[in-house]
Image (cartoon, rainbow, N blue to C red):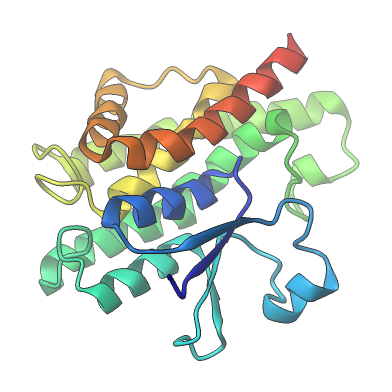
Length: 230
């Protein structure tokens, strides 16, 4: 029996990354859907940040770990998963840089672009969370959509280049994180460049059901949201 418990909210692409990774890596785990439970006292006692995905494992200093990239890095280190997270310092630095760039630059634009349509709460201090009128909020959302193209292009030109993936010939944890993130753009009909469409398709083909099965939860939620808006 696995000693890893994975707590998730299935419509989230942040959660999708770890759900895909654990399946693709063959790391045994038990998945627990905590939708609607993350603000409850029992969950907060383990995770005061009320964030998912979160793994629980007795080997961890605090018994729990959240943040999708940190979870994947930890498990790759623990299980020597060289294909997903190379130990060579230079290759690993590129994987780390791609993930940090995604989290720090690309994802904030994506969240501002998609969260209003997905029904997800936005962040305090931003226009979408303010008392601004609907037109002002939509203008801010549209500006975020426009800003997506530049960092997306950086992934193609710098991190991927002439290789199939950020990880080279095989998908790395940075590739899983990026592909999962791109799933949310379907809710705004974002015109993904052809290279990005082929990139996500190649990752799904390489990982098979490890990607397709959990991705179905995100895609199903997006279809539901779009049907309600129609």
